[in-house]
Length: 329
Image 1 (tube, rainbow, N blue to C red):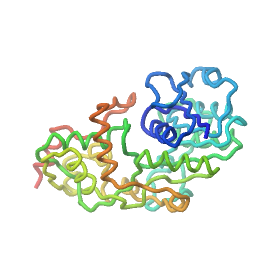
Image 2: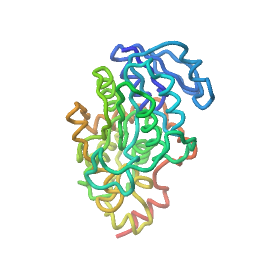
Image 3: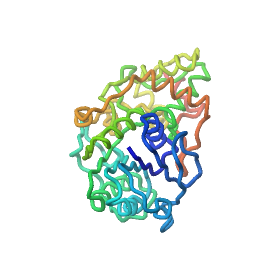
Image 4: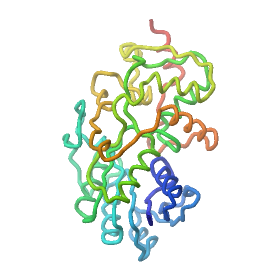
């Protein structure tokens, strides 16, 4: 395919570019020029917040498909959809399961209630509303086939959020590691490369619609994730399992203080329990967690820990917080 990627240098965008180049697609990346695109992709520079910048970068060209990963103000996605209407055969937007109204019901599928949002909003900070607003903008402005991927937890190389990198770095340091249990806690996630590969197959085949895009529930457990971190790093770290009750007693929270993990009950539980039957039926496949973890560690050794997105702290416990959790009996 002749592919346009808006973004394309970090996280899912980078995975899309790498996968597309490997497939033999003709890839054009448009971003602000602060990060180079992957090898094999041609780069154009534009600040999408600046009027006319994207239009100037694109010129009069057309593409078979476009992938947009924008995560801030919906008006930016709206303007891109308007500009590309009639010039691309298929549009993919990487959205998020965060668009569902909180608390997300256990087992929620794509019909679950979503947050109120405005496709013309200029607010860059309300993440859930921004992603939902972008979905609405695409539905209104783009008449061709559009694929909306409501991704959940995204792991793998180029992950700038820092969840898996935090666990890998902490476990590589060794010693007693506070591990949130129960060990068999089932998780739900997607390797960015699997997300990218499926998105490109869908674009090529003209698949449209809205899909929850993560693995089946229990594709891995928290113990399998942490054991894979030990194996990948060659660490002699000792996992010291702590119950959800002990985590709460230590004043810590899942997802942020203890990245990836959430308690099996409570409001956060549904982050690892969504209905992905539609995506699986449409061909989504997910690689083993050991491969995701090992490849993330290799990437970290090569490129180092990426900086956190602006205004977003890196996840993970402090040493003092972990000592408090370890001390509980």
